[in-house]
Amino acid sequence: MTRRLVLFCLVALLFLAVTAILRPLSGASAAIPGGVTPGDGAGLGAATRADLPADIAAWLALMPELATAPAPPWLKVGARLTYHVMSAAGEGDTTASGESMVQYDVVSLDAATVLAAAGVHVIGSGGVLGAVRDTGFVVGVPGVGDVWMNPAALAKAERHAGQNLSIAHVPANMGGVATSAVRFEYVQGAARSVSVFDDTTGILLYRIQAEGGADTPKRGSLISNFVSMRQLALAWTGGTTPAWAAVNAVLRYEGTMTVNVGYGTPGPPLAVAMLGRITHSAPAGVCVKWETYLSGRKTEERYSLSPSAIPSGGVFLPQAALSALKAGQVLDTDPITGITVSVAQTSLNVDGKQLLVLMHEGRSFRRLYGYDRQSGMLTYFGETSKDGVSTVQIELRLTGVSGR
Image (cartoon, rainbow, N blue to C red; front, side, top):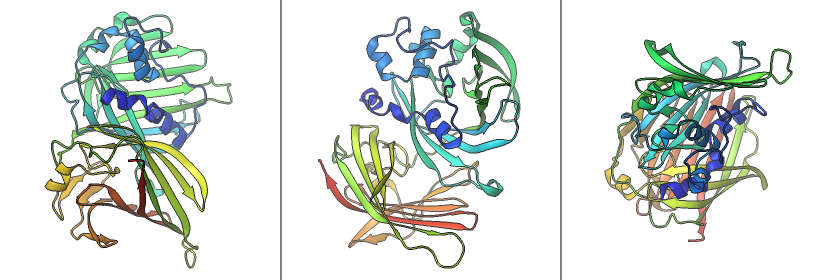
């Protein structure tokens, strides 16, 4: 079931989303291992290649042993990895044109597939982190993913070096601690890609995707550096997707957005509507295709993952969460971003119903997610966010459900 969920949502791959948010690197190669593309993989069936993104299929083509390798011991539901991601005009340029903290939360793991929800916190003025942007999710197999690789396979990785691809064991730094790592460098024309994995844990420590030579106008790079890895304390266990969250169910949310640029009174409220169609449903979560309309005009289309294992602000809370969560309970405080996730002390009354409210709060924003206590359905969303002198307020309510 998890594997079928992947098939409908590959458009949400993290690095594509991060590239769009920070600074596009048009034409850069994402498939690091020798430029291998899906379809070249030795020993991989067509169905497997169809279910996996190109970069993971490329790793499997380069190192077939990863297809059956187990996950590293730390790779469990609730594992969170944090990276500092920077785009720059050139590889040697230390002036960032965009900076973010990117976090991967492992939400599903079985013998065939690993799913990790991805969120981006853009670093704004004064180093203040903005509200998290849901950028979908990344998918891998237990032996390899965007930010992990089986340590036993890494130990013998050098045998896979070849034309345009160098592999070497090198000294490295992991969170300020000296360690050893395996470095993959792929060069093809003006494109260059480097990935460095810790050889003990298999965690990705560093990645650079660069294109263009010194005399190329399109020269640029996207650089990711490991910050931390920790295990979230799961607030509930045994959560599964509710029956109503079926394929083709459409949730409609309507409300307003108000912008105050810090000069006088805020502007008039703008009408906002969001349509969320469930494209696939599995016990581990649902994939939702979102369409956003501002004053009647379509402004955005994206995909997101609503998992059943962690409080991500998705379209539902499982019954296990509704039973376990208590008013005022602090579910998590992230030591890197400073963001706290908690259950509101007081219930929110919307249309005569007392909602269970999850609150996500950081220095620059506050979000409220209101859930129906019987069905677990998200029926209310509110956000106040600040960027410099500007303040944006959004309030949405569920106004319709169809297609069930």
